[in-house]
Image (cartoon, rainbow, N blue to C red; front, side, top):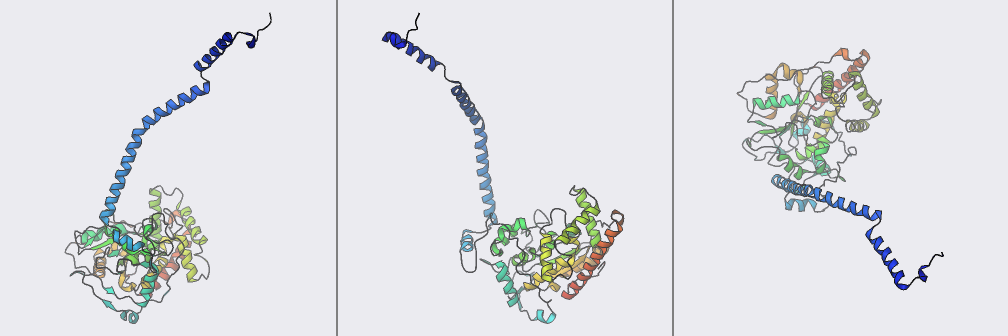
Length: 455
């Protein structure tokens, strides 16, 4: 029987076959269409499940922003008029740094290498008293040519004076680290709780270090936004005792001596320093023990020392016949590439750090002989009454009727058995040379160092 073609069938039969085929295809969709439908349904279900959580996150984010804005308003970092003035582009100002601006990290473009202030040159500096209160502790010097150069180069004084009537903090305990700075701060508060006031939440603000201070440094000029920094800094302190001396005990201020001094002297030109120093070997050993206790180092003391020795050497601090400007650059590179609990040797090389501080103070028109007090940890532990008398006189405090407590600090001595004789002798030779330079530095600038111990 021959197959019959569609064309040979009647028109009605052909239309019936076509209708049957069309109906069959519409009732059975392709597999791809089924999968797409299932995926769309699954997506809608997941979105409905996640949507409430997204709404909660958005609400929390908005509340956080409102809360943060209210805090910033209470601190009054800058009023609307301040912001307009700071952001006004004039020949003497640049825009206030934003969060996107990074801290200026190039080495200092001006490292003063000035001669120490002599009695005659210091006496010639004109000073005038300002009416702060009946217990005004500091004088306000008139800008000299020397200090004006410093201010013009590093300080943006928009909306403020270099020396303001409201001054806080009054003095710093900048280090050295692991010499007992925290214990010294607590000890001072216990003797004169109404005359010496710490920050509200912590003894160590570390406000002037790279991270916290980045927003107050102009990236292009490296100048400090003085007014904004002062407003933020003042928020850390209570006003319960308006005549009390406020302080900040942040040991990092001494070590990062290439940048921190000029920031501090722009914001706090009235500041005084109480510097706590300990035998370099003992201080190094104390730092190592704390690094091990905090699980920041798993190796031996010998390895820890060698790592920092190599770091010092790689940055050029051991170069023979090194020039002063190259030495300053080498210290900057070393300090700002030291991370974590590193810097065990470098933090004990006090003469580098204090020299930079003294040079910056002198460039800002200050006299280290009047504004720096050296306290030896060993002497403070041995005779706290004598050391309190030195600190009290230095800060201009009235005698306290409270008994002078014993310091709670436990002195740690270097354990010679933990390193080889070669390493110990190498360290001792380095520290002997550094201590000799420290003695010369303190005498050259006439700094009050009290009774010398290991130097």
